[in-house]
Image 1 (tube, rainbow, N blue to C red):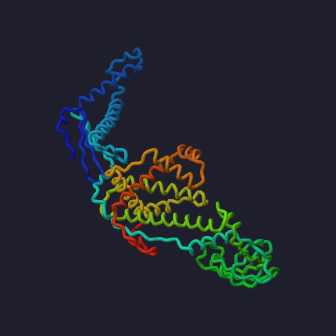
Image 2 (image 1 turned 135 degrees about the vertical axis):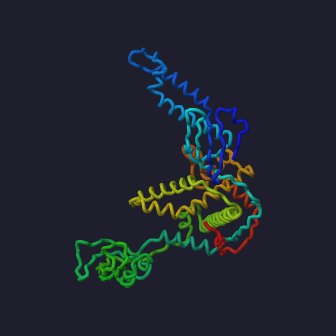
Image 3 (image 1 turned 30 degrees about the horizontal axis):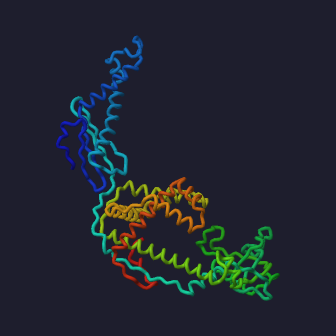
Length: 447
C-alpha cells in the first residue's frame, strides 16, 4: 500500500492496494470541504439560470432551487469529483492503466468525507534478469548449385507451352474433355454436361479414378470413370455414393519446356543471360535463407527470455489481442463468403489464448529490454528504411514515402526497426552455437 503522510491536509487523498500483480485498487477520500465547495458552485450556477413561476429568472431563492434540483446537483458533484481523484492518483502513484477505472464502494454520509474505490488493470512491472548469454543455435545454411537449378526448373515449368503429341495421354499431359455425370442406374444426363474440363494427368489433386482411367486415352475417345465418394465427403449429395462420369476426350497436349537460353533468362528477370539469371536467383535464395535463420534466432531469443522471466498479464490486454485477431477472422470470412458464428468465436478465444499470452509476454519483455538499454529509432533511421524498402520492391521513393506518411505505415516500420535492433542487441550478447543446416533449431521452442 502506498501512503501519504500529509493526507490529512489535502482535499483528495488516495492510497493504492495491489490485490493482484496487474490489478490496482485506489482508495480515494475526498474532503467534505471540497465537496461542499463544488456543490455550492453548482448550486450558484443553477440558481442564476433557474426559472420558477413567480420569480424573475436568476432570482429564485437558493432554498427553492436546492429543493427542486438538489439531488441532481449532488450526483453531478460526485461525478465531477471522481475523475479528479482518478487524475490525482495517476499523478501521485505513477500508474500505467490499461483499462478505465471501475467505481465501487462509494460511501457518502450526511457528514464526513466522500470515499470510494477505483479498480483498474495496469501494465505489468517487469524487473529484467540478466539477458546476456542467451543460448541459441544458428543453422549454417549455404545455397548450392542444385538449389539454383531447382528454381530454374520451376521457372521453366511455369513458362512451358503445350503441343499436341502423336500418342495417347500419359502422366504430365493436359487432357481436355467434356464430363457428363450419370446416376447409379448408369444413365447419363446430357443436360448436365460440364464442357472443356482440363486435367493434368497424374496431378496429386485429381481424383485417383480420373488419373487411372484417363491414362492412355486419345483425342476423340470416350472413357467411363466411376468415382466412389467417401461416406464423410463434405458434399452430402455425393457422400457414400458411386457416381459414373462419361468422359469425351477432346484433346491431349504435352508440355513443351522453353530452351534454357538468354531469351529465357531475359523473360524471367532484369538480366540478359543465363549466368545473370543464376546469379540473381542465388542472391534471392541467400537473402531468403538469411531471413529464415534470423527469424529462427529471434524465436529462440524470445523463448529464452520467457524462460528467465515471469510476466503477469492484465486480462484486458489479452482480451484486446484476441478481439483484434477475431476482427481479422471476421474479415477473412467475409471475403470467403463464410458466416461468422458465436461458436467459432468462442473456439477462437479459447484456443488462441495461450498464443496470445505468449506473444504479449514476449512483446513486453522486448519493451523492457529497450527501456533498460535505451534502444531507440529516430526519424532519420525510419526514412532510411523507407528508402531501402522502396529500392527492394522497385517503388518510386518519394511516392512510397508519401504513401507511408498517409497512414500508419510509418509507425509499423518504426516498430519493426525497434524490434530488429532489440533482437540484434540480444544476439550480440548471446551464446551462439553454429549447427548444420538440416538441424531443427526450433524443436524445443514453442512458437
